[in-house]
Amino acid sequence: MAQNVIFTRSATLLFLEASDTKIIEQEHDFLSGLLETQKQAQKILMILILKQSLRQAECQQENLKVKSLKPMKP
Image 1 (spheres, one colour):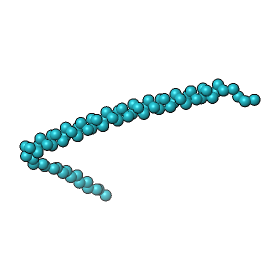
Image 2 (spheres, helix red, strand yellow):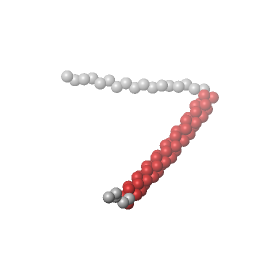
Image 3 (cartoon, one colour):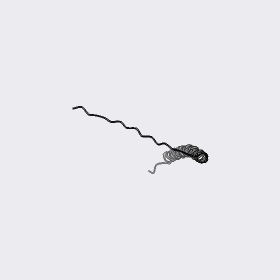
């Protein structure tokens, strides 16, 4: 049995006055700035998480060294 597939498209048309265009451009610039700030914050957060993970790994290695150097009880 053959199946029919129907593809549809939709479009939205906006009719704006010149003053509205300026507001939309300002909103776009504002949102673009927020997005860039979010990207930078995520990058910084990932770096901090990586540094903290490395510190924890170093501490665990030091703890293992200290435990291995302790004399065993007879």
